[in-house]
Image (cartoon, rainbow, N blue to C red; front, side, top):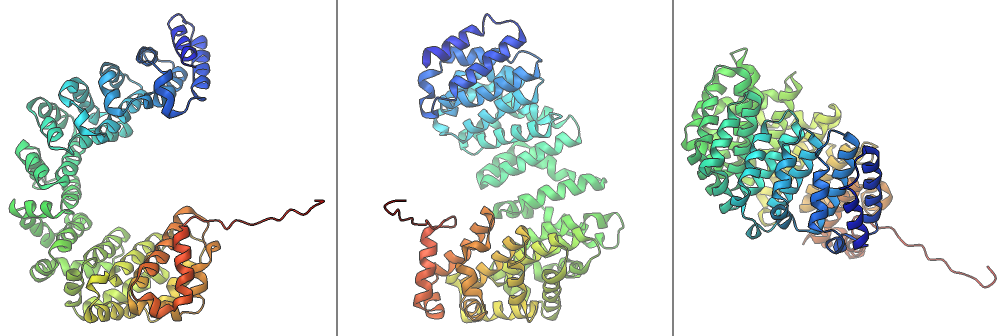
Length: 505
């Protein structure tokens, strides 16, 4: 087989007609299809792969597709890091090819190299390749641009890689790309935000590069679209605690508070509301007490917009409440709002019951967060609060959830399972589930779910009850034994049917 593959690749050097090249590639693919991935290194040589890369210097779409398909497989003969070292020049040429198929092939290999054992990689020796990748962030193809961003992000996950990306040469390339146009500029901003989220030291190095300050400056521009894009990225940065600390220290939170205070009266500023609510929701996730005590404008807008005609604004508000309610501190801050929050709970309950499907899914996930109490935090007061909120959502909420779980809509079923999992974790929820007619039978019936996703989300309910310290007392030993058997079998399980052969059959 080794000689066969090399012979086929050798014949490519003397083949000139496109039809002959194509038929030879088909022959090569057939030969390689019989080789297991683990054995590829024994039948594919470096010169053969370089010949295949050489064939990409064409504008024939069929040859490019066939050749890329083969290269994608034969490159598995080496680890991504070794492959990068062996074929650096080929990757660099491929990245500059006008075909997005070839560019994506090379970028994907570089992504994998970045995910590989970083100690094997010497990014400094691949400077030209990475500079080409940085330029591809400006590609007209969004797919190519995303792959390019991912390559740089993967390199940045280690200190050595981060130092390389922020070296003067690479930083100069990033700054050049930044100047191309607004779309590309925000792609670079998106990249540096993702890098900054990796760790506190990554954020510090990004700040020292000067790129982060350029993003922060955008919030002051008198351009609503620029402010919207900037808010989206700052909200993303605010989803990690070291990001919030940085934004607070840079005075950005105060500046965004000013935007929030004028947005409800300014017609154009109103377009910023979804981004503003999302941003302060991220801040409130980490510091709920401080935000709820110090920013009444945010709190009022958050609850008022649960009934907004703008469905985007409404869904952002529901999601934000769900985010804040993830922590006990967030729950306590919401509880201190009193009747205005109770009214908000009832509105969310109505959404679960009768809103359009996409909003119902969001409301269901928010409901799960509202009632979820981790076992270590299941004090009497916390459990009572969770149960009280569940009842305020709707007096018949469990019946509504079980009805949704039986409907033929996969996304809604999946979302309803998240609520049932939250109930299965907490003693009062377990009691209600156990007492609900038909629930025990439904839970053990594997035939209720058809899709892999639904089977797995239902399995989470099983797992939660099987591992719960209180479920045995509530459901009883015989039922929990069956439940644990289901748990051990896993989410995807088919009962084998035994067949008996009789003499004479």
